Length: 103
Image 1 (cartoon, rainbow, N blue to C red):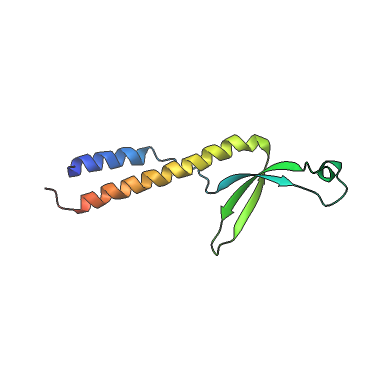
Image 2: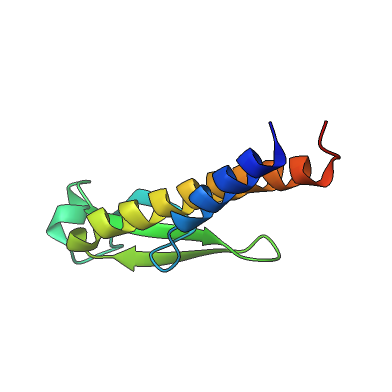
């Protein structure tokens, strides 16, 4: 691949990068059960809940409770994050090619 082609491809990728709507983490479905006083929990049913799990430095995992109507936007932001990460890797590979002398 020629340098000009690599630069053109890199700039095209960079122009499509999502920048604001990003979210790192995993969307989980959890079941909450109260210890006492809840007939639903006493029957073993529990309460389904959406949680965003985000790992922090030091190995700590923070869990953020979500409302059901937030599910679609959180899924989209997580997908944007993974797409961005993949595009950044591709841009890095193109930049490495640019560091080599052109044949």
